[in-house]
Amino acid sequence: MPLYEYRCESCGDRVEVLQKFSDRPLETCQKCAGKLERLLSAPAIQFKGSGWYITDYARKNGANGSSRKEDTSSKPESSSAASSTKTESPKITKPD
Image 1 (tube, rainbow, N blue to C red):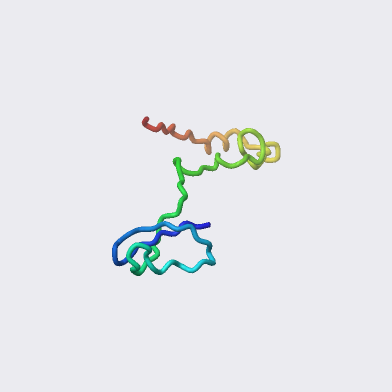
Image 2 (cartoon, helix red, strand yellow):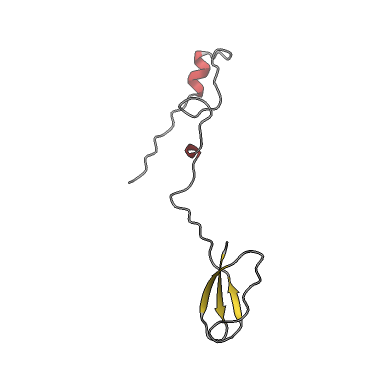
């Protein structure tokens, strides 16, 4: 059952009430008989941590998580074409 929060417009008193979805909202304050207003409040859910990453999901194939299998036997490369297309990527380090 959801927890609803009400505030009295007359005395400013706040009340929390467990109600069913089908229950009618409260209308009168029990202290001063003033009009109650239902308040919107933040949901009771918290996301902790730095986020979700691809490594958070189950792996499809093998230990490295690669889902495709590379086949090098079907495409032979000549030594001159392979040497001209290869580039060395710079190493990136994160500061602590």
